[in-house]
Length: 260
Ligand SMILES: [Zn+2]
Ligand SMILES: [Zn+2]
Image (cartoon, rainbow, N blue to C red; front, side, top):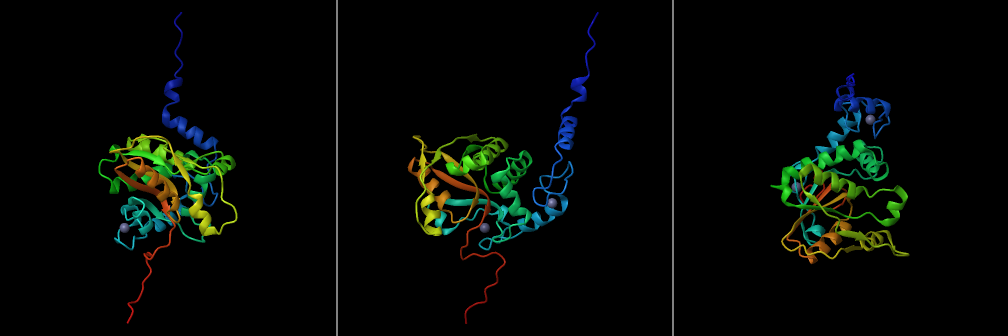
């Protein structure tokens, strides 16, 4: 007797399987904790509105929305990062904004939907500014070892890998974090001297690199990593971050009256 084929494959088609998984996992909005729908990406509809509002802020150098511009800042320009791609500006001292919360979640939670959402946002921003992104190698600013131990993940590495997959690029892990932390330093000194990295022994002559991080605050980490890549021969280095938090003289939406 011929065995009857179970229509399991048909039933478990990808979409249905996704739906089942989705409802079993009871997904919550990463910002407000409310239940989200299948068509939501990590944020509920109300938080997505707030998120998109933050995303519409312009760059005060070139006037484009930040996710469409690739302006760097002075510090990074001096550290071989002539172009910096970003999705939005981190809102300082506003811990409960959806745009901030989605980054906190990326750092701590290891949520697949958050990684998918942010890597997709970064992919769009890269495609706006970079012609032929597949010609670049993607690497990341490594997370400090103590933080990996605490959270169990290197979120920048996960983000960089997900971005590479979306763009069809090669991913390579070139940089390592040094383990020792400096003692008794001011906060500003900490940020600069914490930016201490090693690079693997690699010849990057002629290579174009996109270096990924979640957020750039002073640019110290990104700049230090870029300097190492440059010293190994990298021809071009582009920074790609979810958010910028640095304060420079270019403040978006701030009207400064002319001095009389
Ligand atoms: Zn929400
Ligand atoms: Zn700009």
